Image (tube, rainbow, N blue to C red; front, side):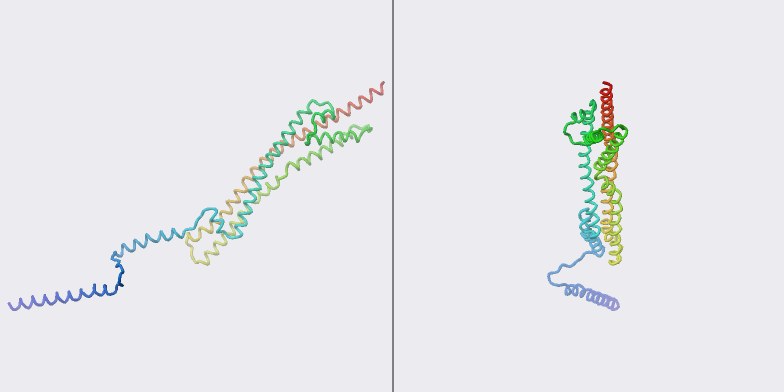
Length: 291
């Protein structure tokens, strides 16, 4: 009996000691907390997931705005200058398109109308009368033929008169060709050089991006991508300026060729009228001599 009493007493003492060891831990934990603070009782796994969910939000807030205007504003000053120059070249291209469309349309219509008016004329004065006071390349051709006939009056060689008139016609045709091709050189230059100018801006921007990578000691894509995107924007603008310039140049090359064929027809018409006047003049001289 005594043995069982000793065993029960030992168990009671050990249970009391264990309870005494566990009681100070919450007390100490309570003493370490500041007044009014809330204890985070979440498990470590839940706390880690909350931190992980907060990280993307913070990263998203740090993302750059990759719209074209924002990339232009944040680009290097050399890349900005390239982009502005290419945009100005694009404006020149579309301005030339509108101006040349109007100019060639009016010139072609005026020349075609003049050729129809002088189609039935029998002499240079009659053709000038039919044409009226309209200033055109056809009027210049007729005036050159009349001037040569007047200055060569009394000369017996019709061949020399025709050759000199043909020389004057060639000068007028070449001058008209130079006039109608004004602006074509600018289109050719823009179409040929814009891609290379844009490529220069891209190379410069990527070089600056690599310099920034070396300074920041990071290869994170979120840090590298904005600078490279700004650099590639210069190439895109170069292509936007070059492709329309090439297409518009080829179009006007075809239209100008057709217009110059009309001018050549006008020179031929003036030459035929001059030849008729010379033949008519010699026929009148011979008839008077026969009388």
